[in-house]
Length: 328
Image (cartoon, rainbow, N blue to C red; front, side, top):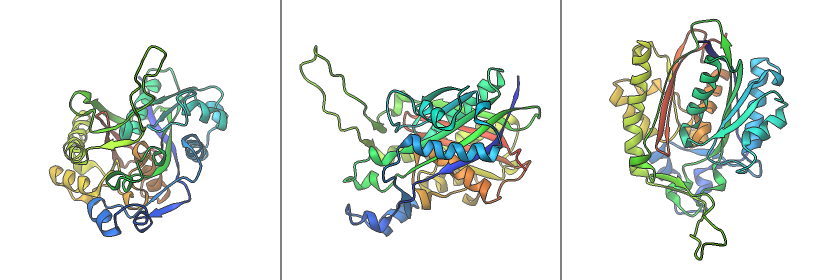
């Protein structure tokens, strides 16, 4: 089996900043109500750029930082719940924009766990020898599927994209451990967004469908506080590491209270979790790679640092990745 490492990251968020005060002009809310319950102060909202555009800009940054030619890319995987179209995939649109002519391309739908799932897929393709270089993207334009009259959801989400380049490695370090799972039986209805209803000449009544996100906040909260520690414990156990070996945990940026609760369960300080939720809100599949690239750009990550990426979301889906950082 081949080893796998991250050789570059990139991210992109729209220029338009929407503050909590801005939202108070749209729905019955205020900055104190939002920030005290979520930790969110502002988010980025697109003024026209769709998911493929955000993905492309994040991908080009990752390619530049990895110092590779797009023709080297063998596979493009995009994790998203808000694609431009059903057909073609966002990954195929990105392929055309970046010139990755030699790549196989597809999207996956795992909601807020999308980047972790995509990272797992890319890692397995490299480990088995089918690919050498993989572009993994998490991207969302959630603003197009949000009910902007529902203050329980519209205050939470933002738009953005993050990307990473994976490559075959001779080192034993890099991607050290991956754990993923799903629970569609017990929580599929907790976070959902309907697609196109069944509509054909043989149906007399077509079900109404608004194509907007619905969420049971309390259920997702309970799920997140339990599953984050479980995922972290699992990747640590797989690699025979302890939480003291980990420099940073990069979680899905959903809610500050979820992170505080998870930290208590793990008996660690919440400062070990890297958070940029206050600036971007919940960007679903984009949240982890957005945070990871921000950490890289700030110089917070050094060769040999062990970090854990951990995500959870609609499906229900969840997963974590233990990584030894290999970029100087």
